[in-house]
Length: 334
Ligand code: GTP
Image (cartoon, rainbow, N blue to C red; front, side):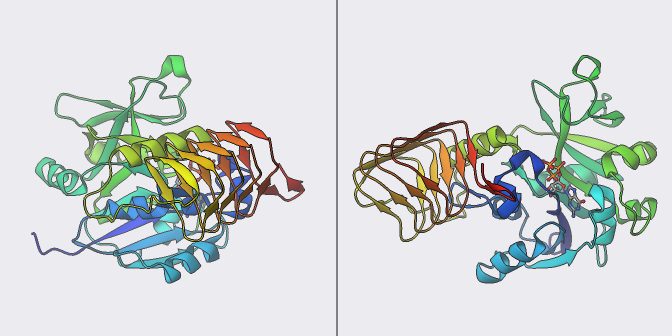
């Protein structure tokens, strides 16, 4: 089985509304965390025996395709586009041509240290129809919540229950393995949510829960993105080159990831900061626990903390940004 070639589907077509205004110009999957886009951290999870990942794209597909062409990932990728948002189930079905048996299905915004080789071994050991990775969280309300029996089989799955009614704190971590047969349960070209509209009908076929012991975060919100970045900096992958951490003219407090062509003039950068390319920091500026995307200019004395600043934005001198997302909206800058 070790030379078996498998395939993966990665869902990357959502609108990313919780990350607006940044996602008006940049799809969520291209926001850089610890020096590389969210999507690349997701692709890094795929084991070496995955021969191809199909990216189910919709919103801003062309930006994702262009980035992948300019910066190929070690995993071969194929882009499949949707002409209308198909939801998680419809997108999975739409991207399914050539799917292996079994196949991996990943949300394009999951940041984790999950070992997919171990998860696949668990899937086979259980003789599972499907295996869902599960993360334990304080507040399960925004997620799909699973209940397991003593054999780790999922006996109940409730999508986004009210907090008081959540039957457990183990939630769908966004990485699953499926028997190819699952695709027969999903109608073609119909928008639908896999979690709300399909999961219930396949539970009886034997879906198991793989409880995560590694770090995990849903990089779907500003707080989630910044937490995911801290986790990534604290758990660097051994198979990846460390990001650049030099910035002439700045006092650097690691960990940081500095893009090409950045300039600083007596600024302080770190900890937990990503600067994209050609970022300029004025005298006495201070940036911490933040992401500044390509071409951002920060005026002298500005202080940026816990914030995400979209491409090309100018932050005037003396500004204090805390817990903010700054980017262009269809109406202007917000
Ligand atoms: P929000 O609008 O902030 O909820 O973000 P989102 O649109 O990304 O939705 P969500 O975080 O629930 O999506 C989980 C994963 O599924 C993400 O990786 C999305 O990119 C992906 N996704 C969501 N809806 C679609 C869709 O209609 N088509 C495709 N191809 N992917 C989707």
